[in-house]
Length: 312
Image 1 (cartoon, helix red, strand yellow):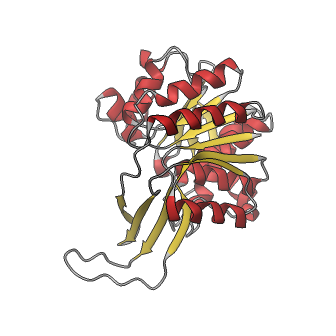
Image 2 (cartoon, one colour):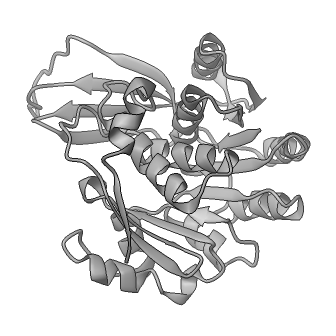
């Protein structure tokens, strides 16, 4: 089983607009509300790929119940820890031919008692887990090193961990002696982490940055470059990955779909090339769909065959 962790889930609300007009009324004809947060996007895509997955994390209030209902409707197993405060909303304004403006609520504050209660449930879930994904930000009340505790527990149970977070939480995990198996920063997250300024037009500089000592002990380093593909480092080998040009419908959640593809391919004992191509394929497929954290599996092999991978 793949266990997905989402500590700061949300109800994701998507508003498509032809043009965003500031300081005025913007009317939308269609609204999408989904069980969201990065880890739940991962969960849905793994489920759509046919993987065996269970979602965990913390949920509270009316919005928390909405998320559980959404997962039930999709027949996705879940075991969340209940908290007192309300789960958050995350709003994405999709406007002006591919631009995206997000409004993200901070979310609830987790008490010490709730933290201890979740960790106890998490330990029980690990006994049924083969692969672990940890995604997204941490809610108030949890320190940046919280993920390192989850990673340590997984390491002690010899469960590989795919970590997709940023900022202080990512840095804490990289500085810890308890390492995740894989991280998937995008270019802006690399720039923030290393205090540098790289862009997609300088892939050789990105490759050089991936040799920074802070990444020592990480088996898989996947740096996504949006429409320019990715650079992957594993087993001492670099790979340059190019993806097909597409008409982007909704880019929200494509990084999460990439993590889902990685986790699923790992669970299927795929080769290195298959793992990378599966991940890039699911990321592209998400961008082709209006619904966040969703892929059309009937188009999988068409996109898969267009993903190009080469030693770098």
